[in-house]
Amino acid sequence: MKEIEIVVDKGYGEKKIIISGSKISFDESDSDLLAEEKKPVILVIAGNGNYLPPFDKGSRILRELRESSSYNFDTWKLVLPLHHLANDFFRFDIIQDELEDDKLVTNRASWGIWHHSSENEKYPDILYFNFPLWIINSYFKKHGFNQGVYKEILSTIYRTLLSSISAITAYHLDTKYALLNRTLLFSDIGNNLIDKVLLNQWDQDENLSEEISKIRVKVFTEVLMGWLANSNSFERAYISYGEGIHMHVLERAWDDQADESKDESLEFEEALALRAKNKQLLTRLELNTSIHTSLKYTINSSIQTFNTEPSLSADLIQSRSLVEALTLQLCRKHDLKSKESTLDSYLKRLEESKKISAWITSYCHVIRLLGNEAAHCKSEITRRPERPIGKDLVVIHAALYRILSFCLDEM
Image (cartoon, rainbow, N blue to C red; front, side, top):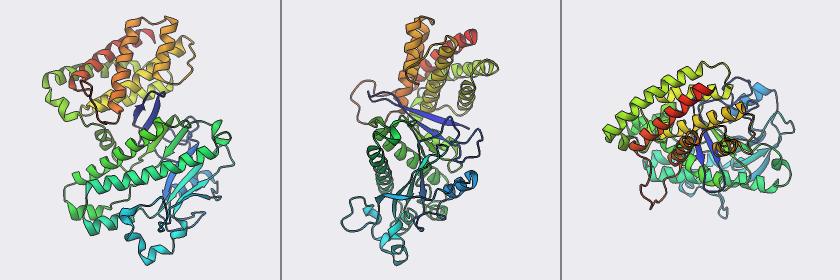
């Protein structure tokens, strides 16, 4: 299953966000995000706000988890109430009027972020965002769609959710979460904010639906990046979009510079030629039976990326993921142990061992740096140049071509 990996590095060590099209279940398939090697310590899902604990109804994902595991998930505690009373700190003020509907008030006691603590190590804890987010659809039906309001609502939702995770991990600082893996898994929270019927009333053009999906992906990821970079409890977070958003929409959500790159026609054509050569090398490397399964997976994802319409951000991010998997394979070959599971750490071990020539690792560092830039939030920038452009895509694929050629000889 295709994934997009985003590296967050603000000087406190590398953190990762993996945007995935895989599903959330316990069926132990290759595409299952709850498989042992990916299993999170906390799974974050959403309910529709219409039911009380133990939430036998209101969430398709929770229902499917119960069915695929035969585990009840029936013990819930309220971490953060979202009752939207006058003195509440956490409120979604934009939709306050819609929440006063008499039909909704009867369920108000269940609104909030609930926590299930698993007693079985096989299953993660669950954070359950139980709130009628679908009421936002009613707001836009009444007032019309406004992109600024939509972004504000999304940002508030995601910041509220992350606040509850911070509270839980602070409470368990020296106990439960201190010794477990440092991975979070989020479902596609907010995917039902605007229904298709309303979209069709606004615009017959399907591009609006795609644009709204891209906004949701970007806002969620940017809020999560800022929080994760400063978190001492977590190193990586998966966001599962399942079949809710086509993968090309996810890629384009991280492709702000694509049009700018294509305008630089000469450089872009050179990058395309190198890109084609790299696909050939990847196809040859994929046939190597001695490489690790995780590297084969990344090679396959890279081939898929390089087979699609050229994208500056997607190519930079995917190239960085590929080089990380290649350097890990080289460390395994030379029996080099790394303190951390990061590209920077793998490169340091290879450089310390002097097993790999310095110019090869320097190519890897080029891709590491440019891959980081492609994934960073675009806050105010005063340096020059401000960000990678089409010319840098040539450099990426040239460096990658030399690295792949080297790995074909060495692996």
